[in-house]
Image 1 (cartoon, rainbow, N blue to C red):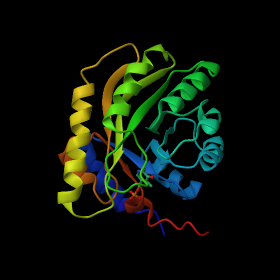
Image 2: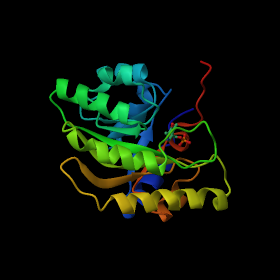
Image 3: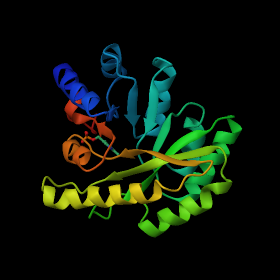
Image 4: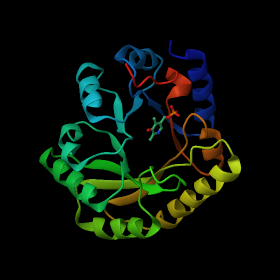
Length: 223
Ligand SMILES: *Cc1c(COP(=O)(O)O)cnc(C)c1O
């Protein structure tokens, strides 16, 4: 399926008007699709799989800002640490420590978002409110990371009565912990909303959305 250029322009115009960042989620899609949106000015792309991301980064334009939005295993942080722009799905303190270690090795400060579990489904990763609090408390010694906000994935449902309270809850945590400013905690980003729910997410405080299938078409995992 070709890249939905018209849809991209439409979404982009809308998001620019409300000052919301767009991450184009290109997982499983070929580099040609990324280049098509790059040519239109898109610079932020999101990927879920380390190996796929590393392969794409090696051959695509160096001014792309790569976002890791999947579940990141500690033993794979080293592969993306040299170049990653923002890691969205940090769901444990252990992972935060490893990112700090690899960032130090690379002489970088890596920006991260802590992922909060907001969906009903068991399968979605993320911290609960208590773990979030503990991670923020513990982060003060980690000088090569910068925690710039929160990320969450709502339930897979098109019922706003299910999804909306989840977004509201995450926005509440974002507001509360946003008051906590330290050398390496400075909240600016609330990453929530995907193809099916991004408008609702924005209405409920999101300022960064991660959109894949609306731009690149449905994904085929069987190729
Ligand atoms: C795949 C993915 C997206 C994009 O999903 P679409 O429904 O295709 O827009 C957004 N966020 C995360 C964390 C994802 O894994």
